[in-house]
Length: 445
Image 1 (spheres, rainbow, N blue to C red):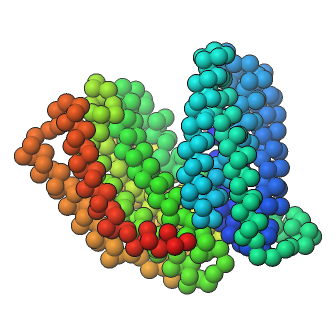
Image 2: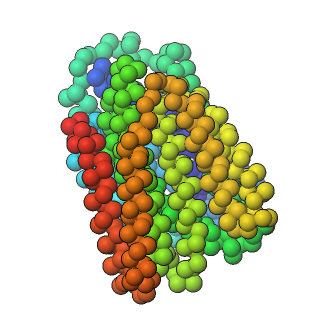
Image 3: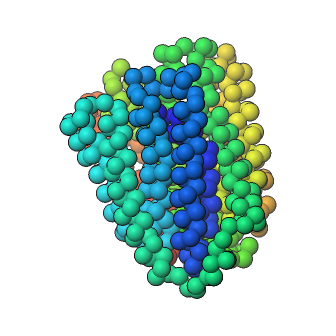
C-alpha cells in the first residue's frame, strides 16, 4: 500500500511541490499563490484519479494487498495522494513564510490527531491495516483544512498587489516552466533510490538475508539519525534560503546558499561524530539485544548518509538557478556506480563491501555535484566553518573514546541512556556555538 502511494507521490507530486517551494514567496508577494495552489489541488485530484484508474486496471491481474478489498485500496491510495499531500503542503508553507509557531503547532496537532484517530478506528471497527490508515488520513485531512485556512489568511495579508485574472490563467509558457523544473527532479529521485536502496536486491544472494538484515539495521539506524538532523535543519533554515533566492541577484543567491551550507555541512560533521561515538549505546537502546552486532555497520550508514546530505545541499544551487537538469549527471553517476561497486567489493570485503560501495558511490555523487553545480554562481565554500566543525567533531569523538577507555563500555540500559544523554548534551552545546550566527539571522526572517 505504502509502496503504491510512494510511487505516485515521489514521481508525480514531490517535484511539483519543490517547484511551489521555490516560487512561493514571489507568488505571495504578487497575489498569485491562491489561484496557483487551486491549480495544484486540481492537479492532485487528477493524479489521484490516474492512480485509481491504473490500480483498478491492474488489480485484476495482480493482488496488491492480499485480503483488502479493491474499494479500500482505491480509497486509501487516492486519499493519501490528496489529503496527505495537502497536509504536507499548507503546513510547511506556513514555515516557509516565516510562521514557525503555526508550523510547529499544526505539525504536532496533525501527528497527534492522526495517531488518536488510528487508535480509535482500530478499537471501534477492528484492528486492521485499513482502519489504521483511515485514521491517519482522517487526522491529516482535518489539519490540512485548518492549515489551508490559516495559510490563505496570511497569504492575503502579505499580498502586495492585485493581479488581473488573465495573468493568473494557465498557458503553455507556465506549464513548460513547471515541467522543465520538475522532470529532472523526478528522475533524480528515482536515481537516488537506486543509489541508496538497490543494495537490498543486488547483494542479498551474495551475503545472505541474515547478514543483509543485520547490515540494514546498523546502516538504517545511523542513516535515519543523520536524516532526522537534516530534516530539522531544513525546516529551520530553508525558509530563509527560499526567501532570499525568490527574486534576487546571482550574488545574493550565492550568498544565501553559502549561509545555508555554512549551517548544514558542519552540523553533518558534528552529527557523524555523535552517532559514531555512541553507536554501541544507540544499538543497545534502540535494537533488540540479538541485533547488537549491527553496531559494526553504523559507520557505513553515517558516511553514506553524509554524502547524501551534501548532494542535497548542492542541489539547492540548481533550485536557485531554476535549472534542475544539472542534477542529472551526479545522480546518474551515483546510481550506476553504487551497484557496480557493490558487485565488485562484496566478494572481497563481504558485508563491509556493501557499505564501502555505498560510501564510494556517494563520494562520487558529492564531488560531481560540487563540480557541476558550484558553477551556477560564484559559489564560495564555507571552508573556515567546515574546518572548525571538523575539529569539534574530532574533539567529541575523542572525548567519547576516552570516556569508553577509562569508564569501560556502557553495560545495561540505564548506563547506556546516561552515556547517550551526556554525549548528546555536549553535542547540542557544540552545535549551538557552531551555528548560532545562522540561527539568529534565520530568526530575523
